[in-house]
Length: 281
Ligand SMILES: Nc1ncnc2c1ncn2[C@@H]1O[C@H](COP(=O)(O)OP(=O)(O)O)[C@@H](O)[C@H]1O
Ligand SMILES: [Mg+2]
Image (cartoon, rainbow, N blue to C red; front, side, top):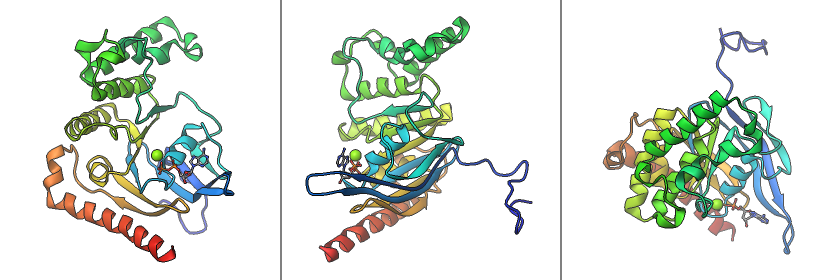
């Protein structure tokens, strides 16, 4: 029995705690025109193995949330935990992929993907483990479809290919959580769709937990198990929608009526925020 009345203890064999927990997170930035509340009272969870998309208009604080979870920024108030440890700084348990790929231009695809393995924090690993990780890097390069380009430099790759390399690099150390900030935002529509298909396959095969930022509602519905809808000024969570479209997913599912229904619900929520803001302005 889980959660008997008056019993605050988690029973043995009870539900696993969420992998990521945000509680009442607030972020205020100073600015010339006074403090800007980028995030106000943000609380949500990401379960182990879940794919969660953050959706909202530009400026609603999506990137700020990712940066906080990455441990690159400190909250003004509230707290966040990853696997029961409070997030107090960056760490290899989180992989990062941004809109710009951030590959090192002087390193080949293989060298870029293996880069995390050469960092000092990982040098102490025993040789067998290093070898296994190098093999993992090679496997990921294959999985993202870059096998024929393993010796190419980033300059020689298309935007989509560079993002594939960045994704492989972020996954190489087996992060518990993959953080992606509009990773396909700069790609043309066709490449974007191919990348979505690849990410669907990859996250399924790797069993990766993902927190993915996008302002593209269609992309969110295709990828997510759950969509966290945000409004701006101040950035806040207004609702969460479960995407109960079965997996494995395919880009063709965008044409399904169930897909259109969920997309419509998210768009209505986002639109409600615009009207709300217009009436305030
Ligand atoms: N370093 C910063 N200094 C001041 N204001 C910032 C900073 N980073 C973000 N902001 C402000 O916080 C709000 C949320 O920004 P951001 O998280 O980038 O939104 P999104 O990613 O949803 O577009 C915006 O109003 C933005 O101008
Ligand atoms: Mg952003």
